[in-house]
Length: 114
Length: 107
Image 1: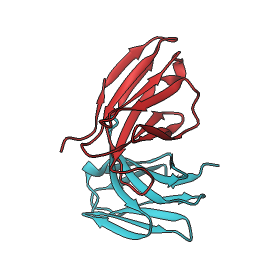
Image 2 (image 1 turned 90 degrees about the vertical axis):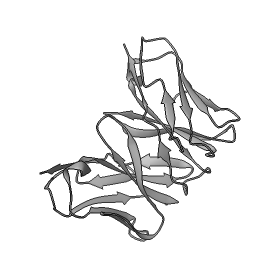
Image 3 (image 1 turned 135 degrees about the vertical axis):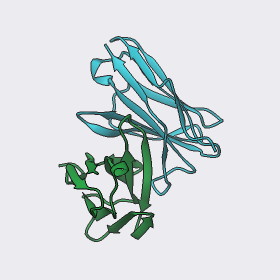
């Protein structure tokens, strides 16, 4: 089975722009979670999607949003980019929703905001 | 105070040594995860635990729910084990992460 894929792998944007990141889960996995990793804050939970519905959202401003499609692929969007949004954005898929399921991580998208 | 605390922050070992990384948490959890992150960013899930002990090759993970504590052990460490090890807990449909332990194994 193919693993979790994320596109693009690297991205450079300027302040004020918006960005869309994509995540394709492992075939058959219905849950996708997104995480932000920065040197200062470490890994932080952004949101989880299951069956096209957002189940939970972490403590991030409304500029961070996402969605999930019927084929379980997910996108996240960050609008009005700030310098502090520079980070590694990771998605992870699991068979089902909830904390009892093993998560499989993608390689991440490294976003740099100038 | 973070909900998930790991120790040590950094660890250097000689090849062949037995290694222990500790994780303490302060909230009620549905599961605890041990993750490995290599330079470049890729994360691999090593274990998911809700009780007891799991073993995979040279890696052993234990959890004590009453004491809210978990340990990750690496037996016969090898330079390829050099990575950042992260403890994470599933909590209230959320996931909280420790700061990570940077392990360097020298040949």
